[in-house]
Structures are given as C-alpha cells and as structure tokens.
Image 1 (spheres, rainbow, N blue to C red):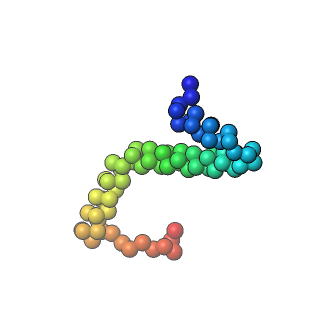
Image 2 (cartoon, rainbow, N blue to C red):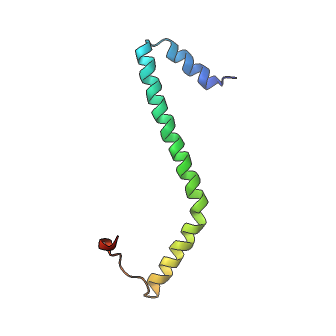
Image 3 (cartoon, rainbow, N blue to C red):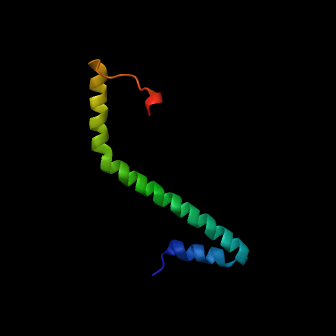
Length: 76
C-alpha cells in the first residue's frame, strides 16, 4: 500500500518530462542514501555513547593527575 506522501510524489513526477523525472530520481536516491548514512551514524553513536563517556572521564582524570601526555602526531 502506497502512503499519501509517496502517492503525492508520484503525481508530481508524472507531470514532468522523463529526463527530468530521471534527474529527480537520481537526486532522491542520493538524498535517501545520505539519510540512511545519518541514521547509521546516529545508531552507532548511541551504541557507543556509554563507552565514550567512560573514555572522556578517564582522559579528564588522567589530565588532572598529570598522567596525560600531549599527542605526538608524528607517531601516528
């Protein structure tokens, strides 16, 4: 079953020339792919949120106790 939003998009696309329809569809594919990437990023971030908080607290504690050293970017 088609949602109202999809039915509206189909109607809007139907009045366009085929070449323009193809261009719109390509833009939609790219946009949807970006949205899927954003959802994946958000999901991954939520999964690791607790670990990030723990790591940040540990780093803050190491800095406060003098155990931290400045990053040596030449060693990366």
